[in-house]
Image: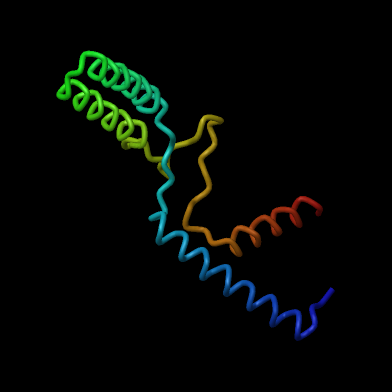
Length: 124
C-alpha cells in the first residue's frame, strides 16, 4: 500500500530525527561498547569493606591517621568498582554464542531495511 504525500513527509521527518539522535548518542558514547568487568567490581566491594573496617578501627582507637587511611582505602575501592578496565567489545570478535555481533556502523534505518528485506525473502 502506497503512502500519501503527507505520510511520506512525516516519515522522512521522523527518519531525519532518528539520524540526528543516533549521531548524538554515538558522539557521547564514542561508539564503543564496554563489558562489565565483574572481577574489578567484586574486588572493589572487598576493598571498600576493608576500608570501612580500617575506618571504624581508627575511630575506635581514636587514631586520626588510621581513619584517614581507611577513608582513602574506601575511595580507592569505589574507584576500582567504577572502573571498567579495558574490556571492550570488538566488532570482530564473536560473542558467547559464537556469532559475530552486528556492525555498529549500521544506522537505524539501514538495520530496519535489512530486517524487512530478510523478512520478505523468507516469505518467498
